[in-house]
Image (tube, rainbow, N blue to C red; front, side, top):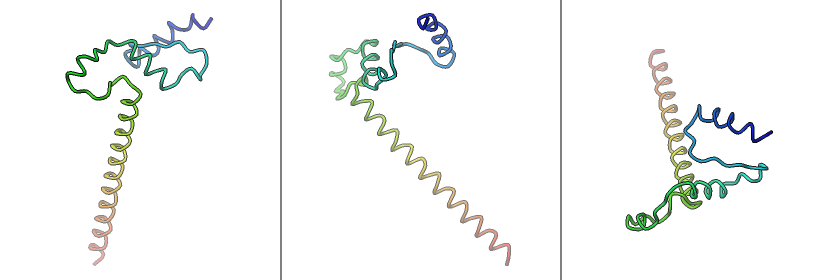
Length: 104
């Protein structure tokens, strides 16, 4: 019965994103970061010799690369939030100064 649902799920998911890798899972515990990275790596052609010539140190299809990208994303998001917070504070101060000036 579940195998009959697969085409429907692929069609539904395909309406949101381009799907190039699929996985069949029996339990939720089968869905791990390692299993996803391993599945993607098997699905793509990665020529490690070509990557080595480019002096790539970490394959983009590895746990290490994913973890590194995740940390970079977190740092970038934190920088973005800090910048937004600073802008709101500056705008708030300017508003207070403007209303204090108009009261005079």
